[in-house]
Figure 1 (cartoon, rainbow, N blue to C red):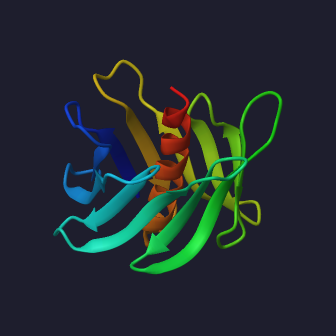
Figure 2 (cartoon, rainbow, N blue to C red):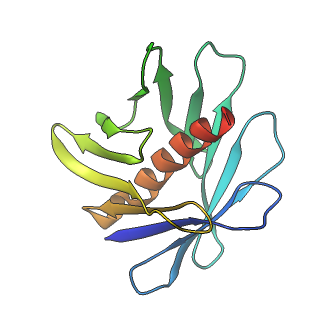
Length: 155
C-alpha cells in the first residue's frame, strides 16, 4: 500500500494531505498551535484518529504518538556527532537508512514494515511511504510525521 505524503503549499501551520495510489485522500494532518509541534491526524472522512506531539524540555527531541487519546509510543532522537539516529519504542520497530536524504526503512525484527522516499523536484515536500501491511499505515505515517517535524525544527 503506497501513501503519498504531500505538504500543502500555503498553510500557516504544518498541514498535509496523504493520498492513496488512486488519488483518494486517506488522511489529513492539521498542525495546531502548541508549544512544539502538535499534529492531529484525521481519516479520509474527517474522523480524528491520532496525534503526534513534540515533548518539550528534553535533551534530544522526542515525539509522543497517540492513537485516539492513548499514547502508543515515542520516537526519540539519539545523540550522534554525525548524521541522525532515532529510537522508536513502538512495536519493536527500528529505523535505518539515510534519514537526512529521506531514504529510510522501518523494520520489525528485520522484516520491512515501510520504506520511505522523497520525491524530488516538487513544489512542496512530497514523500512516498510504501507500507507492507495496510493496518500499519497510520503508525508508519506517525513515524514519518515525527521525523519530518524534527528535521523541520532545525531549519
